[in-house]
Image (tube, rainbow, N blue to C red; front, side, top):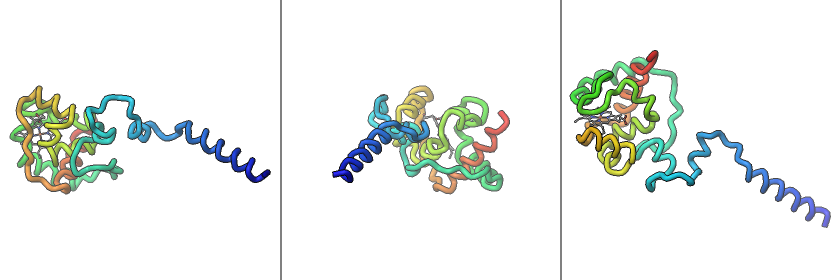
Length: 156
Ligand code: HEC
């Protein structure tokens, strides 16, 4: 009987303890369903839809990759994007101030679905009136582009 009482005490303690949410805000967002996500999960709402399905633990900036990214950018993106001016698409220097790294990669890797489904990408499409086409880039290319955006976005 005594053991049972301890058991009850323990479970109610655990129960109330779980009720208070001590997780960091970033994690809480993933479970908070009180806001309107337009049918997307919280992760998708913040980080886009595509092959990147988890937060990336960003390593320190890799300048060699950024250099490769710059080359890819001039070959496959510069026809529509400039760093500091609006062009066919939005200026890109500050893209990481607007979007998460995962969002940027999903936009690069899956722009067509993003433009159809994601509320932020839909807003941009409505503003720029040109859908961004997939540029036949690999996940590695997208990582290099991300490093390039990290590099050019510094000190600004
Ligand atoms: C044919 C023109 C075109 C090309 C080529 C293009 N984009 Fe875009 N991009 C756009 C447009 C237009 C938008 C705005 C969203 C939309 O209308 O689909 C956009 C949006 C984006 C966004 C989202 C910006 C934001 O603030 O949400 C990123 C990131 C992006 N492009 C990166 C790239 C990269 C990297 C490449 C090269 C691999 C590239 N784009 C190639 C036209 C283009």
